[in-house]
Amino acid sequence: MGQMGGPDGDGPHHQYHYQALLAAVQNPSQGLHVPLHAGAGAPAAGPGPRPGADADASSTHNANATPHSQPPRAFTDWSASNSAFAAQPAPATTNTPFHYNLSQSYALWTHYMLNKNVSYSTYSTPHEPLRHTHIPDKYSGCAFSLGFDSFTTMSLGPNICANMTPMERSISAKEPENSEDLPTVVRSSDEMDTRNSGDVRRDTVDTLPESKQSHESCASVSNKFDSGEYQVILRKELTKSDVANSGRIVLPKKDAEAGLPPLVQGDPLILQMDDMVLPIIWKFKYRFWPNNKSRMYILEAAGEFVKTHGLQAGDTLIIYKNSVPGKFIIRGEKSIQQTNL
DNA sequence: ACATTCGCATGTATA
DNA sequence: GTATACATGCGAATG
Image (tube, rainbow, N blue to C red; front, side):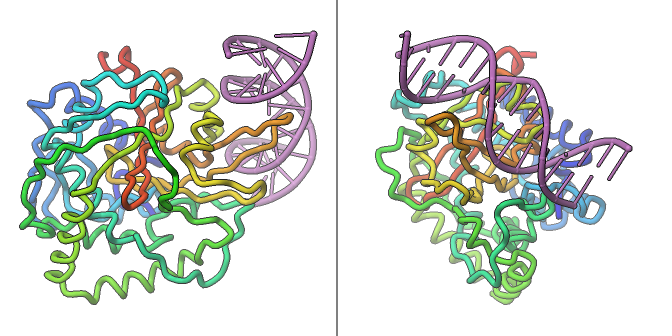
């Protein structure tokens, strides 16, 4: 149930989006010039995703992403924030602690991300277990599958958090020190009947007065932001097979075991990860295969992520974890060669 | 019948 | 030489 010019099916759209974002990253001073507080339902003022326009036209898109039905938002800021990341050399491996000093634009992005996270930090009781051995793409990360559409619409409204003060505190991204935080993970065997729960949650949220929603969201944002630390838990230079059409990305065993939730063979986890750049919540299936005496850790249903970001062999996949709410954030980093094109 | 997905096997690089 | 991690290919299963 894609609702934006999403990562599936309308290649030109998301290619364009990506290129626009990329351009903003390379020229943050020009940016995309999308007003941060554009009015609800206003047409997109730039080449960003067109949630409103695509909400109807591409309802069948976006097999494993969760784009948001929402007014245009400040991709300029996100792109610039991405630039802030890119401007600093990342460590070659996750074994090297590092910290990012982020610009205000990143703070704006984080406001968004954390605000968004408020909505789905709690789950309703599953109505019925979803078979995990094979999750059809139509359920993988669909916006409606977890009812995110309603939440994100709520939390991303242009008036939401209008009273937020600019974030000046720098946010650090560092190596994990422990893995005790429970990220947004749905053990697939416990996953709810997403079609039903979506309706339930939409009702729950939509009945809240907007002002109250805004207030609560802002409060949560403030609290989360005060302790916002982003840990790089995994970096992977993508290979040809990773970016092939298999939709699978082999994860480094050490990082996967250290930073991602523990797995039991035959019991994959559904990992939900916010896209660092795009307004998408990706939903991956995380599992491992026995391999000789070892294991191979796999991130499945990653094809759309790869496509959306135009990732190629040599690019880097980075997974962050917000240590406080335990949320995952995923980013595809283009290699320098490509970003300088 | 075909395309896609899944699970595993095998080859290669590295420690 | 051995063990491990990972890249990739392939056949079976599935839709």
